[in-house]
Image 1 (tube, rainbow, N blue to C red):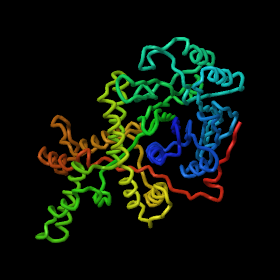
Image 2: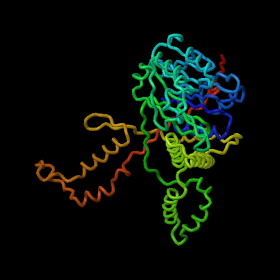
Image 3: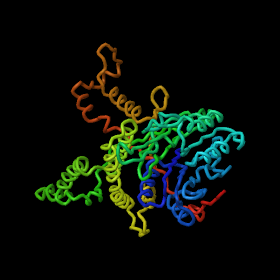
Image 4: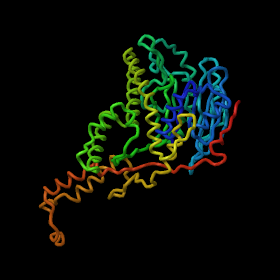
Length: 461
């Protein structure tokens, strides 16, 4: 299960919602928490409905800061234990597993109010039993190593450290840039800190041994989204047949490329094959896969922000801003891609919402998939590398010439032996890239019922 938590500092922006929907499509969280959404009332309900979750719970902001939204899928059983202006405490139950506690935190920027958070969010005071995960923006750090500047008073960390010690919580660490908040347009004005984190008690840590915490790139907000994955996952991919991509037409060089590479002297089929080969090369070298390009831009943003954590420089800040602008140009092509994949008529929704096209594509996808194989020793192989090595080794052993010292049985002499030149030919044909399994992990789309997306409810303390 994946949990995504993000201090978005305003959920009304269309640009923010585009980025959020990309993260939702990429990581498929079962639970989403948005902090500081700065939206309330009917507009907040419309945004929650648009995000495609089955139910939601909101605690409105007090004044101009704060506010906590929690949205989840119906695959989970979620019960509300406590709501507070600075946290929401839930009980989570997955199928065939014991329930566990989950708190989403937004610590007030005001030091005195933040002390109330640490007093209220207590296992003894709330009578919490069992595994407990607490994640969010605590607006606090543990040491001077978690800020970019050196002018941090140790007394500002004391309350947060004491609360973690008294509750017996464990910092789950992170993968990605260290700092989760940054601000500044130059090296002199640059500030960064690790204000967001995931903590758990020992029981939760032992229950989810494979849990990982990822700091995603900081885009459309000053804070990084925090992704908590409770189990390891393996994405599998494979070679795909050629398909025309409608987004190519958005490239200014595309018309001239077609004109210069169409051979009218060949038959129609030959010309199409030749053009398809050249288009694939052009797509790799010039246009690029829009999703890979988006991931590459996000990876560069992540790397730039990681470098900024240790060496704030004006050129890195400018590069970070440039990459953000490049990222903003991709959604239009992405929407056109999903529209083509859906094979449905365009629906004028008045918003750039790709959710319908994702769903229509999921309905069309084949169900079959192979996610693991069992080897000769009876062990299950789950990762791409292990499966690929196992299949490659199988074919190598199948077609490799036996050692001359091995005594052949009588029946084996009746079959011709493959010579090395034959194996070289087979090896040239059967490569790891060609035998790698093409696995798809698409769940069937289920249209919402009368209570579907309207199952959200509002609660304010």
